[in-house]
Length: 281
Image (cartoon, rainbow, N blue to C red; front, side, top):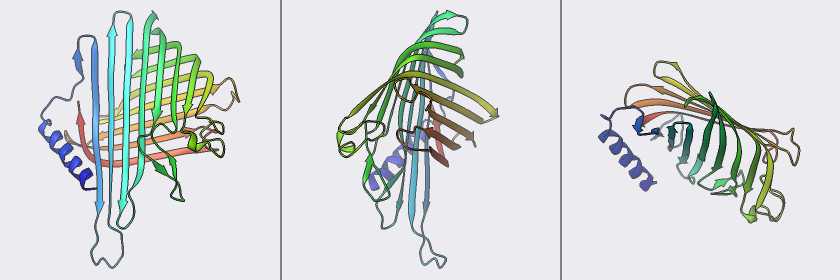
């Protein structure tokens, strides 16, 4: 915990030292890059407080980075999303509350107007071990991990509005074999460490300003497996709201809904809301 607090202080110092830099998209030749790094922290402490309460500390780190290329009839869009959160109650072990590592990449060659022949890649996993209600580990880095790759067609109006359709997408699910020792896990059969699927993938991205200093980023991923139950579409929707208070502070809200009946029979929901330091680069 002490190391983490020192890290947060270092990040805060870094942010302060760069606070005077311009908050615009950096352009280097055909390359454009922009990103946001946010630190959200909350802490409660009680001493002889008659109403009761447990000392606690929680934090969230969010990184959202775009690196895009545009020259003549070629386009290449890349996005990295990293989220990690934890909470610590006095007398209890630290528990993670948020954990996401995702990379999206789409390469396109213009066919006509806003249409491009495309090749896309999507990779997602988590960075830390997760625990179930009984205290056992139910996930860790690369278990599970999901990789999608395939050719298709990209419709792109601009960097903030685009849809990629890939009708021949290969999807790989990776998991450590100890999760499948006694049965299927995350869609991977018992005794195996990888599952291969072939299907259609549709990925949509739309970012817009709701009002001044309030932006909304929508990311939608759909996947249908031709090889088994094609009607059971995997849905992954994420909404990221950033409400700037001033140049140095912002309120961040993230909502994510995932439906994948091979992993869980129902919707998986995640919400994160916090106020903290925010640095645009």
